[in-house]
Amino acid sequence: MAIWTAKIVSTACRISGRQGVTFAGKIALKIDPQILRDLAAQVREKIFVVCGTNGKTTTNNLLCSAIESEGKKLVCNHTGSNMLAGVAAAFVLAAKNNGKLDADYACIEIDEASTLRIFPHFKPDYIVLTNLFRDQLDRYGEIDITMDMLNRAMKMAPEMTVIVNGDDALSAYLAMESGNPYKTYGITERVFDSQSDHEIREGRFCKKCGAQLEYEFYHYSQIGKYRCPSCDFARPEIDFEASHIDMSDGLSFDVENRHISADYKGFYNIYNILAAYSAARTAGMSIPKFEEVLKKFNPQNGRMEQFRIKGTHVVLNLAKNPAGFNQNISAVMEDEKEKDIIIVINDNAQDGTDISWLWDVDFDRFAAPGIRSITVSGIRCQDMRLRMKYVDIQSELIADVKTAIEARVADGCKNLYVLVNYTALFSTRNILVGMQK
Image 1: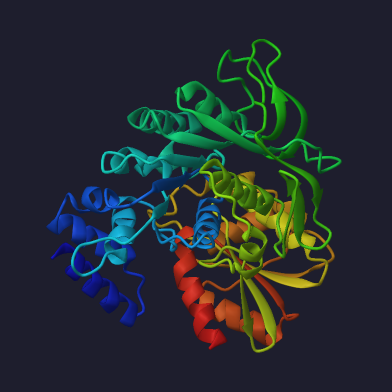
Image 2: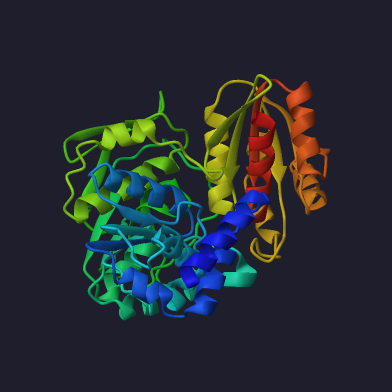
């Protein structure tokens, strides 16, 4: 009954133009509170979960594609609905009408704050930890609170292997102190000649003894090569090390004597690709078709998703915290062509109603010759316009997102980037899909 009802609700929502995944999961759990536990127990081989502040959806979907390339069947919450109801929906909607689940693996993206609610239903075999940044202060609080939640979740699954970004001191410390087995991935070579001293860097102090960490170099934010001068905490040995980084034509690097390339923008995507690769290899998969997977992989749900509208090339990307937004800006600036930019900021409950994080983003980098125009939109468009004013950048305010996109398609330079925070993502994507059709 739970499965049938959830499927009917999901279909009705899609027909009406709503996503409906979370609602379907809520209905299923209401009818049968044990439905997630029962279905997860039917996964024949392993369950992966992906956690971290940024990069969860892309990493999870890449890992799903890599496992599918091995000829395996799996459950995956592709849409990024990563709280309890969304995770339940992934399993329920993948089940057959007879209540049975035909899946070798499950790849599930989980919101860090939801791990403590989800892990009682099933114990993952692997957790991929991408990074930890300050995110939605009114919901998560400071990073210490998020780390504590993840630490308690790891203790609920002591046999779970942690696949961690070793270049992030916060994530690495969490894995190393958890008592769980762990594997690391990272980039040992210096990629950038210099990094801005103004960039927000979380976790500057050693979690073990409190001393200020010393960095040989930064990749971005606090991601880099670090050590504590006062105790034995340092960047761990890297199991899956990316080297020979090249971003001149897409992204490429070497790992385990294999050359990996992808036609993506954004240095952060090297970490996403490396995380998915490391997870599959840790689970014993050879993934010989990984290169092919990357070529076919089309980022969806607003993660560098591309559209073509009346001759305008449009890129939609999610940006919901300072570290993520700064990396988005870097990806935009990699494009040397002239470009228009629309920034959409909402402050709904899922976004976090505290938008003070906008003042920690390096928007001054948009004061560059290649930026033809900046348009601010969304519920908090006035705040975003004020933020741009403080870095002496002119912006046009068009509160309605569809109107803003139509204006830039009509009078723009045919190269448009739309940067949105969380609750603007689905509605903006629907607008772009409709306009593309």
